[in-house]
Length: 121
Image (cartoon, rainbow, N blue to C red; front, side, top):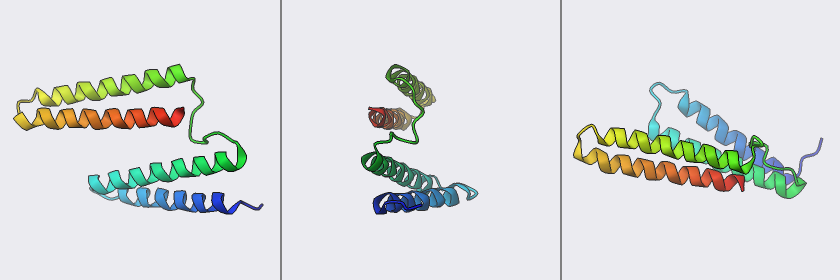
């Protein structure tokens, strides 16, 4: 079976990113910064693969569970609310710097949620 060059390249990049991610999260202890970077690279490679496949074949994103937009929006709102509650609980612990860090974490989580919602559009 012949695979187009663009799909093959995207597949190799995705496989490489997936293997790198697995190697990093398999370490004990898991280095958080490296794991975060590897996860971001994996998401980018998966997005690129899905875009190439869609452009070449017309097929939709193979990584998406086919949920209706209202369900996706509801899940994203719930995820953001959970992150905000967790950030508020961290802020209540009493460390003056925790409140700022918790707010920054909630903002980062919200940005990830919004980016994820945009991927479903």
